[in-house]
Image (tube, rainbow, N blue to C red):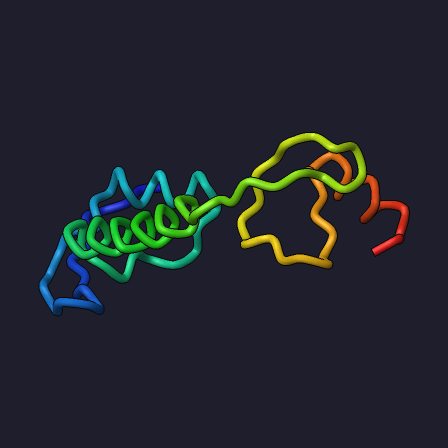
Length: 101
């Protein structure tokens, strides 16, 4: 299939960018049916925003706890409260799979 370079308009900044024949061929080989909506600068900016969000989520504060099931020290992503059981990941998964929660 013969592709030729296409000029597209970025949906974010409105700039014109070239969707090259090589990029079109790559998109076709992956089965992508839509053309890109953003220029490379806006795609990179959007990716950085997404990565920052993911980084924020993965760097949440962890709290020390002791598993009520096996007694191991563990860390949980919430502040343990008195009267509420805390499980290590192994015991939590066992409890969850057995339907006890």
